[in-house]
Amino acid sequence: MKKCVIKLEKLKKNYKMGSVDIYALRGIDMEIDEGEFVCIMGPSGCGKSTLLNLLGCLDKPTEGKYYLNGCDISAMDDDTLSDMRCSYLGFVFQSYNLIPQLSVVENIEIPLYYQGVSPNESRNKSIELASRIGLAERLYHKPTELSGGQQQRVGIARALVNNPLVILADEPTGNLDSTSGKEIMGIFTELHEQGKTIIMVTHDENIAKYGDRIIRLKDGLIEKDERISKRISV
Image 1: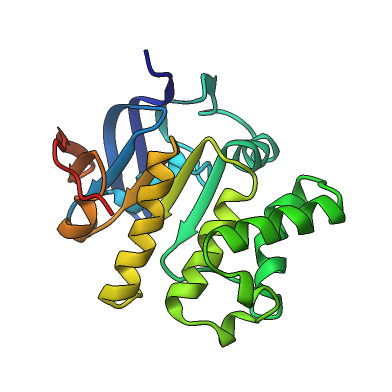
Image 2: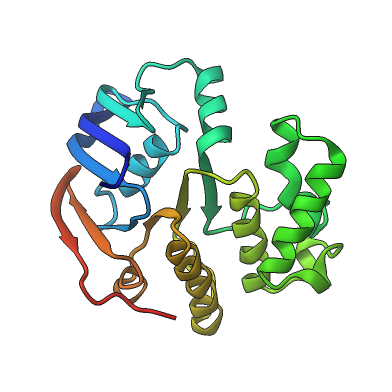
């Protein structure tokens, strides 16, 4: 039996904008098992980004429970949430979020720095990861010297460097052309085949077909949760 790595129970998130209450999530129940590749879809304003922020321990729910690897993180303080992010999660962003002053290998090292890993171990691990995803010839280049696809490869390597339990990706191909997008999805496919748990927000139906499960949100609720029998393979 596969291990449940994420469990949500009646998860709600409300915002206050002036005198108006915004109900971003209205009660989400969801379980994600280890090794799943889940794509979250839905129209603008449906709650996708809010849900990803909660899953990534970047925000706290208004109501409900969130269990990550069996730990109830719903009411954890900010320091503990930060520790959970470092220990269990890896993030891949649409805009890459690389530090322009740092080289490829230095950008990949960042999560290890916050975990207190020794400089020598951090450098060796980062070089190994960069080489695995096709950046062996770009280790000491700055982000501005890389193509969009190469920058996203750096982002993926950075997300993997702490060997996370779950990879969270927010529109990872949104800023890429179709060829680069396919290359990046090829990397995600390989990671999934290696057993990684991936949760990806996307608006692109073709990108969602790379996963094995699609969760569709509407008005802060799960409208549909479907398994994909024939996912795209690279």
